[in-house]
Structures are given as C-alpha cells and as structure tokens.
Length: 381
Image 1 (tube, rainbow, N blue to C red):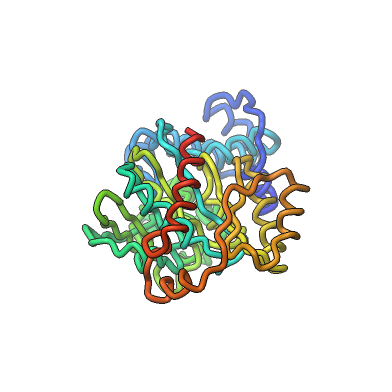
Image 2 (tube, rainbow, N blue to C red):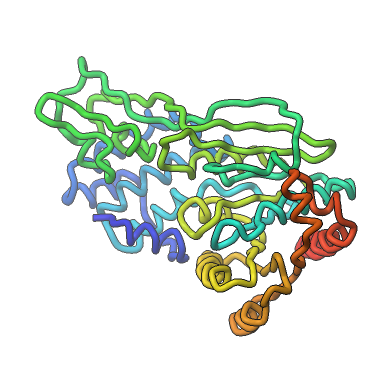
C-alpha cells in the first residue's frame, strides 16, 4: 500500500518511466489485488467528461491530470516503479508552460530573515526599470507583501477545492469509496456514509471508484485570491481561510495567475514543509535568504537540503550582514553555494520598514544593491 514515505520519495526523486500499458491492462493486472481498480478504469471516460481542472492547472493540462490521477490509483495497486512513476506524473502536471521569462522563488528556512523584504524590493526595482514583473505572495497563511507594495486591488475571488457529495438515494453502501481513500476523508459505516471535507485531498478517487456513480464533486471554499497592481507591477496574493490545514491548493491557485512576464517573483512561505515545496516547485531559481545568526545558519542548512533535493539551482542572500557572518560564509563555501547579495544591518532601513516603506525606495545604497541582484537574475534567462 502507498505510504507517506513513498509520497516523499516520489515527489523528490526522479523515476524511470516504464511501459504502463493501457488502463484496462493495468486494471486487469491490479484487479487481483484490489476490487476498486477495475472500476476506476471503467469510470475514467465519465470522469474526463465531467472533470474541472484542479487549482493551478492550465486547461491544456486537464486531460493529462485526469489520466495521470487514474493511472496513479490503478498502478499504485500494482506497486513497483510503475506505481511510483504514475503518482509522480499525477503530482507533477501542475507545471507551468515554459517561456523566456524567469521564475524566481525567494525562500528561507525560518521566518523573519527578510524574505519578503527581498522579494518586494526586488519586484519594485524591476518595475522601476520598466520590466514586466509580477509578485506572487505564496505565503498564504500570512501574506504581507501588500503592506510594502500597497497595490490597488483589481479583483478578489474564492479558491475552492472539489470534495465528494454522496447521493444516498443511489448509494448501496458498498464501501469502495472508503477503501480507495488514503486519508479516511470518506468512510462507509453500515448504511451511513461519512464525509470529512477537511481531510479530503481532492484526488477524485472515490468518484472514480464508485460503481453506481453515486458520488459527485462539489466545490468547497478554502481561501481567497486577490490581485492588484502598483503601476506596471502586478500583484497576486492568496489567503488561506482560518482553520484550514492544507495551503498547497491556494498556493497553486496563486501560481496559476502568472502570465509570461519578464520576471515572476514568488514569495514563498518560510520553513521546509509541503507549502514551501509547492511554492518553489518548477521555479527556474531559488534565492535563500538568511541572517548571520546561529538559528539562521541552522535553518539555512535545512532549506538548502530541501532545494537541492528538488534539484533547483539556488543561491544565498544574506540579510543584516555584518553582525557575524563568518560562519555563514564558511558554510556556503563548504556546501558550494554562492552568496550573490548582502544587505547590511541599517537603522534607516529598519525605520522605513516600521513605516511599511520599501528599503529600495528610502535608501539609495539599498536600491543599488537590489539593482545588482536584479542584473544577476536576468543573466539566468
């Protein structure tokens, strides 16, 4: 059976792409192990006809997402490399179409290192140089880029995820929906079907497994998208509803709003957990913001391990440099990662920050440093 550890390995490591064969073939082979998989293959055409793209998917990716999801459930019962590849394929279809633009994520191992400071100032400087730029605030549990960029809001809209709704007049309580759900978001108990929307990961497996088509998907609101602009700078942020546990769907919805701007700046959540992986995935480059403190160095190590495991090129930015940076510099030399920018500890910038002002706007030295960082990023294209 598929485990969380398998999920982590499949998400972070490349897998061979074996010949899976057709869905009926896989279902036939796997049917000896699970009674749900043949039903999944049988229901796939209906599912494809009804399917609405998940948050973060472009329309042309819809068919691949549905097929990948069905194959994942089926091949998971078969096990081995086929199951691993299929699940990775399913999880990986939220990739953006590549253009000539650069997508840079600003991340950090811990909060408070200056990640949003770097991201907002970099976006502002790029806009001042008449670059086409969008700032995506993917720190959806606590977005604060708007404090500094102060965008004029253009629109707001809810973020929803599909969750199962059971027609009890049709259901025969066979329990196949609960058997296929890996998170116990739907459970058949006697002649009752219990649905726990907060646990649902919106995979659609229960709908595919139901032999009577008694399950449909209904939208459940989990957050809000907001978009605006400050001059030529476009701004998008997501906000997760209070009490919600899963932020990746909102992060995917924010990333889906990116167009082919010259520069896409993603302000990632702090830490190294699932929200960070979702935010930095498919980026061209990651800038890891740290501070020259023991805690900053410890969490930089964790963040660097995460990004390198994802095989995304990354570099380091030191904020409040000059406090005691020798240990950080030695760590970066030892790990073979370049320090591309340093921003000194400055009382003037701290005062501007307390007023919600951008450092690049209030201090010419910082403006020049961000321009240099921007020039370095443009070389990545």
